[in-house]
Image 1 (tube, rainbow, N blue to C red):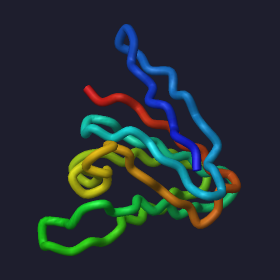
Image 2 (cartoon, rainbow, N blue to C red; image 1 turned 180 degrees about the vertical axis):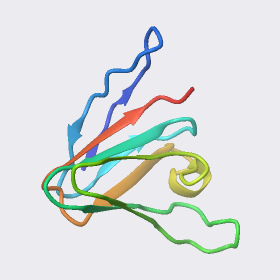
Image 3 (spheres, rainbow, N blue to C red; image 1 turned 45 degrees about the horizontal axis):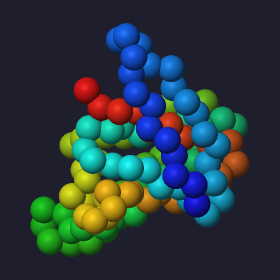
Length: 111
């Protein structure tokens, strides 16, 4: 499991720093404004954001996102929130994959 670095926008533009997905999953620092970018090549991939807190209905459940082959998917608020997906002490969020093959991940600082 690797900690994906957060890319900071500079001068109004952001160069996305893609990281290959790790077989055991990945983590990222999640304070709230960050957004996660997912890019699949070859075949679709399923990314699971592991819940650390309950939803507004009082249930603890993960969030699954399908990334179509050849596309980039952006996941951020209101779908992805730190109160549900980040450890309240460390602010680290975790994600796992159906397979890491052909999947790249990036975390961008929010506005």
